[in-house]
Amino acid sequence: MAIGDQDLNFKLRMQAILWRLGYYTRIDVKLASTRESSRQGQRKQPSLAELTDIDVLGIRYDADYTISYAVADCTTGGRLKGRLGPVGRTFWLRGVMDHFRADRGYEVLSKKLSSYEKRVAANLGITLLDESSLQALEERYHTDRTPLKIRLTDDKAYTYLESNIHRVDSRLAPLLNYRKYAFWQNQANRNLLNAISIVRKAHNILEPSQKFQRILLLDIVTLVSVAFLEACGILFRTSPDNVLEALRTYLFGGPLALQTKETLLKDINTLVESLQIQPSLFPEETMRRLSLDPEYLPALSDMAQRFISKPSEARNVPRYLQAIILERALYDGNPLRDIFIDEYSDITFKFVHDLAQFFKDATGVNPAMFQDLEKD
Image 1 (cartoon, rainbow, N blue to C red):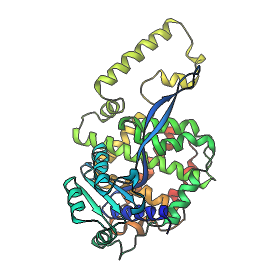
Image 2 (image 1 turned 120 degrees about the vertical axis):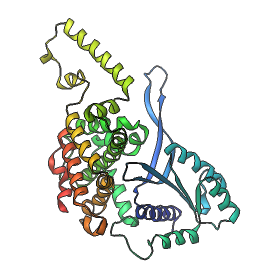
Image 3 (image 1 turned 90 degrees about the vertical axis):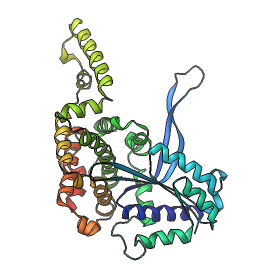
Image 4 (image 1 turned 90 degrees about the horizontal axis):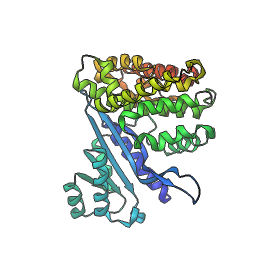
């Protein structure tokens, strides 16, 4: 097996373990930051600089919306990343864990590991795994005996998805960028607003007959569900009397940031009125920006109240969407009832539909873009 394939094998196996533990999972999460690049005499243009990547990321929500993160780094013994040894990699991974506030970390290597190396990793809160200990972990969570009915360990499915999703219409590059970089770079409270804005601008480009455009949109909605559950967690813990106002405050960065934005917008509107410009002369997008609250805020608030009232069902929405992408959209494979078995919930599936309906209304995409939800 080629080196790259061996890395993917480890990633997929770790993904399956985290899935068994109730995590929503992603492979190859890119962490990047904005930098300015310029040529002499030209205006500076922002660009992204990749900082590092996470081989496997798991996100799990408990019944009280407490978020747990797990990260895994998977490397073949012949090509330790950055030429760091096993102990050096664990110190790097500890930094990544701190960035995500992760409470679980796994370093997976193909080389045989010493008890000293495992002990040092354990002191950092990291489980260091070689092939034999990875197999033992799989036995513990029955991934070796009870096959998952979702293609989490299928390398062909992963390659098929990732290679084709990057071949969609080039005009959808902002959606690919959001999926790959922006979601992980943005502040959590901005991810909902940004996703809607990006998709709204591309809604006329998205074509329901194109399978991988539908999958790309579903994946964006999956990330939106992660961001939305984080917002619901804050609302759940603060128990506000006015959910709409509390959500509004969260989305705009807190009370002080909201007050600053309201003051600035009031000044702009005063200026527009003083110039005696007819509102009809402004483009629709400009008029929208002269109002702080997005028109979909009441609908988002209503959905938040439903999610908050049933956290045990709402917390699995990202996992349901992940299963729909891998099984129903990609291959027309196993239905959700077969994947989740006793843990399947009609309420969770209803929440998936609610989120898709909200996103359709907020962005203006063709309803047929969500046709894969109807296959279950």
